[in-house]
Image (cartoon, rainbow, N blue to C red; front, side):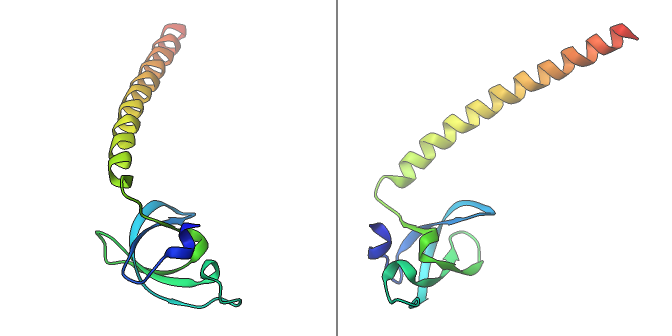
Length: 104
């Protein structure tokens, strides 16, 4: 498992409940109760911001070659879908407003 191979200085994906997965540099760790790598508590610094947090190893995944390319590609798809769905929702809202105005 990729959590077993995490090391200080490495960049990893950090998956928090309140935040999208974000790349973070692993600064340090403390051993968990059973000294397995998957039970470590890591101090991480999120890339492109100065925020540091402590997170469980269960919230980290190794950053792998190709992740950035795949993320850029899927972000473009998501942006297109967002624009399409936003336009559809706006058109439906305008149609509903027009229908309501005709009723009155």
